[in-house]
Structure formats: C-alpha cells, structure tokens
Amino acid sequence: MRLEEAITSRRSVGRLTAPAPSDAELHDIVALAMTAPDHGRLSPWRVIPLRGASRETLGERFAEAALDGEPAARERAARKPLRAPLLLTLVFSPVPDHAKVPEWEQLAAAVCAVHTMTLLLHARGWGSIWRTGAVVTDPGVHALLGLRKHEQLLGWLYVGTPDARHAPVPRPAGRPEDKLRPFAPGR
Image 1 (tube, one colour):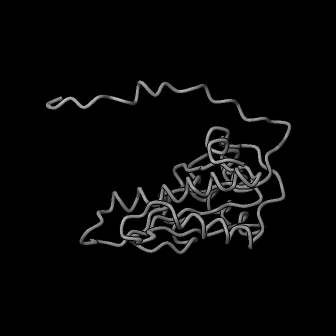
Image 2 (tube, helix red, strand yellow):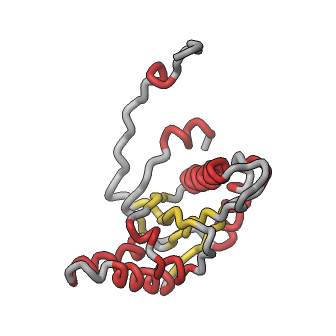
C-alpha cells in the first residue's frame, strides 16, 4: 500500500476479530514506530501487549474501577478489553526535567509513534482503534500494568482483523484552506 493510500484510507475500526498480528510482526511494527519524530531520540513511550487471559484480568480491574456503577455497568466494563484479540497498552514515559526537551515535546513524540503504529497496522491489513476512558487515570489500572510514578497511561490500541460486516465510514474530504493561513505579523 502506498503511503498516501494508507493515510487517506486508515480509519478507526471498532469491530475487530481474531487473528491479530503475531509477536514477531508486533516487534517489527514497534521497531518501525521508533523512527517517528522524536526530539533528542528519547523514545519516551513504551507498549505493553495484552492477549488472551491478560485482557480478562484488565477487564476485572475495569469492573472494580466501576464499582459505583450498577452491576450491568460493571459487566460492560469487564467486557471492554475483550473487544479485540490484542490490546497495546500505550504508556507515556517521559524523561523528567530534561534540559532540552520539554515534556510536551516528549508527549508529541509518543503520539507520533502511536500514529505511526496505526498506519503500519492499516497498511498490513490490520484494524485498530485508540481507546481511552476514565480508567486511564485509575490507580488500580496503573498498579496492575506496573506504571511508574512519572508515567501516564495514554489508553490502548485495540488491534485485530476488521469485521467485514461493519465497513468503516468514509471520512469526508477536508478543507486545507481552512488550515493554511498566510503569515500576518501582529495577528
């Protein structure tokens, strides 16, 4: 798939089935994502893959985080990690107080790496969707995943085979003229 085609045809895919990329293919995708823009080459991110029973364990923690909810809400929360055969836990791991690269630039680098992964997955025929929610700040979820004090959970890339019965909705064409502004000093 050509780069332009991958960029214009990639969509978040909410309905995913098995199979998912192998460990070897995932290793390759992460290696390629490490080439995303990254001032200082700090690589301020990491990925925790979850497959099989580890998704159920995460779902149990989601249900515990929803304890204030009714039983049906807890059951829905527990099933969320089961919506794809592979979850890539996205962890922002900044280098604290870096002399040249502020934290916001490090976060931008982490997001560039995640976007690169979504394009690579799509170009290889896989579907993905970046999901977040209130659980990204839950201390129990952080503890379960082994996040360090300075790290931030950016959510999960749910990854698998796109369900052919649910084609992604085409994205309407954008208006570049709305984003391009001529230089106008003082404005």
